Structure formats: C-alpha cells, structure tokens
Image (cartoon, rainbow over all chains, first blue to last red; front, side):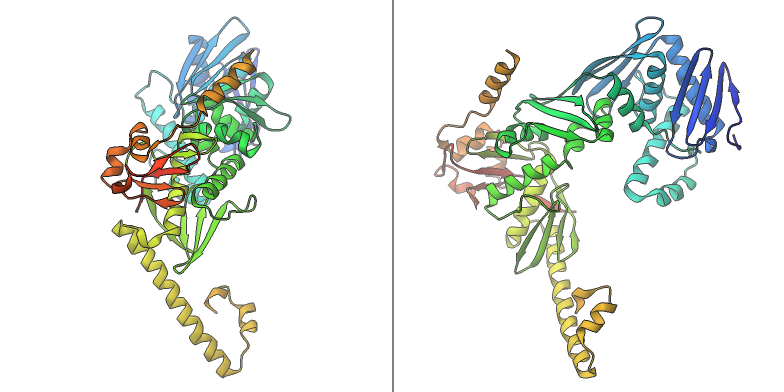
Length: 394
Length: 74
C-alpha cells in the first residue's frame, strides 16, 4: 500500500486508497471509508481486519456492539437491501439503512472502540481497542505526542483511524428521525437539525446532568440545545456517557453559573469565558465551569471528589430537589473551596493552597525588588513589560 | 396528549418540598449518616451548617440547600 491509487485485492474485495479515503468494492457493493489521515499509510493487517469485519457482518446478517455508556447497538439484515440499526439503553432509536450504510456504520462503530458482543478474546480485538487509547492520547496531548507514544507500543496500529464521527453523523443525518436520550428518568429527544443536531428536553429527571438541564430549562429559558455533529455521533453510538458529552455544552455552563449565583450568592456574569473568578486574601482563584479545575494565582490545584454517589444534592426554590452530576458537584465544590479556603480540612489540599499562596507572596516580593532595581538603573517598567513574557512578575 | 403528559410529569418532579428539619431533608436524600459524621459539606442559604444544628435548622420550599462531598487534594 505504498503508492496512492494502486488497488489491492483481499478475498472478494478490491481496496483502493484515494487521499484520505479508502474505496472498498465487492460485486455490486462499493463503500468509501473516510480516514483522519492519508489512507495509503494503512497497514495490510488493518485492511484485512476491516475486510474480516465486513465479511462477518454480511455472512451472519447481524452484529451487536456495546458502548462505554449503557447503550447496546444492533445491526440486523431485514432483507436483500435493507438493514436495521437499533440502539437500546440510555439511547433509543431504530433506523433503516442500506447495505452500504450498514457496512460503513459497522466499521465506524468498531473504530470508535465499541467491542462486538459477545466479546472475542483474540489479538485483533485487542489491537483495535488499543488504537482507541491512542486516539484519546491524540485528543488530549496532540498528534506529536500520540505519534511518539505509538513508537513505543509493540502492538501499534500502523495506520490512521477512520473518521468515524463524520461517518456516523452523515449516515444519521440522512436516516434518523429522532433518538430518545434517557438518564435517571430525564428524557430528551435528539433530531438532526439544519447544520447540527437539536436536543429537546421533554421530561425532567431527578438526577444527572440531563435532569439538571431539564429542571432548569424553564428558569434559564431554553427547551432546545444545539449539539455539534461530532458530539451527536458520540451520543448516538454510546461512545461516552451522556453526562460527559453534555458537560462542556453552553447549556451546562449556564446552568452551573445559575447554581453558583443561587447557592453562594456571588456575582457571576451570564456570558463570557467558561470560568468563574474569585478574589480574596489568598489571591485570585479561577474555577473552570467545564470540568471544575481549580487554580490559585495561576497555579493549578489538584482536586478530587472522594466517595461514591451522590456527589451532591441540591434544593432550590421553584426547582425542587435534585441529585447533582459529578462534574457540576465538582464545580460547586471548587467554588466552595475558593470562597472558604481556611475551612479546608484535607491536608493534601491545604498544603497545595498554602504553597500557591506562598508562591504568589514570593512573586510579589521579587516584583517589588525588581521594580526598585529598575528605578535605580533608570529603566521604566513599561519598557521592560513590553519585552518580558511574564508581566505579573513586575 | 403527549405534550400534556410531559407537562404533568415535569410538574410532578419539580414539586417543592414541604417544611421540614434539615435532618429530615438529609435523611430523605439518604445522606444523613455521612453528614453527621462530618463527611459532607452542608450549606443552607449560603451558610455552612454544622451537624449539631441539623435538627434545629428548618428548610422549606424557599430554602437553598446544597450538600456536597468535600474535595480532597490529588
């Protein structure tokens, strides 16, 4: 597979790479699989794995996948040309697909890291599962670190991943009427919109992020949330739990801003960056509304929530009682720490806070010394500020 | 019909609590024991309530209550 455009025959399939896509042909069937990088870099082993999966699906007439969230996906042949894709669990829908779409979805779902059920204990399975780990490394630490990490992995995948989010979003945009997203009693309906997908909150629940969003929807004035196509793709195949996928949405940020205002009575702007700033004698605290990350004077404070559910319970006028999702509880908790750092009892956390505070004290003294030195030398601070990358030192 | 049912269900879930002591509130949420052991942070209307005041603190539908599992350093 060194040169672009040269076809390879594997079993009954003819495989031809074209740029970032791979064209697979067998008899009347032809599918184009998009990749996240040039498809001519795929190893022969990965190609045979893909063909094996397609042949298995066509021979058996069906496959079952399990998501990381509580979702079961089933692909089943209805007749010569029609297939049924069903999701059950936290996500529920039935869509009819053509054979080509069913094959594409099988490849996409498999590449997203969802294992086939019942699980197979063979090396190929392990190989594809590991490739998912490298996708996550790439997302968090960037492609260079991922490429470096791959060098040290003996079971390295030797090829780019399928652009599975795009495949799922494109197929679902055409075929899906609506999908029900259920979580602890809360129900929302996901439908394809003009550009993205639209999530409509239909039934309030007693817990979880979906429950919180639906309960606050009247107060905050929204019933519909716009969901990006790639997030919708993750939701539809149950690649991540609903809470995690909605945690960084604008609606979740608005809900958390509202809760901070209500619970702690502090002024939080409606819009702006996804952060809350608090100033006190310890310095300037920053709390991320997306993941509850806490910083004191620009120094990261490593925090964790200990113990099982419930992570937090809240009761507000007109809204009632609600069990909080893990991330919202962490955000409120981080704000509580920033507002009352002297009340923190955990030694490890206290130590970090004191260290961040001392560091700032040291920086302030250093700044004062540098300023006096500069004055003695007849240099204006403004001139140095223009040159330095750390203006807070001055 | 479906919309009417959805509205009814929304109201059902959002029904406010009646007047009760904080201890009863925590017990109904299943966190009273942990809160009494001091494992939870309990705030009522923005103020931290110590375990000894759980019985004497009254919460009604106007009260803002939040119960959190305190953070620890990583």
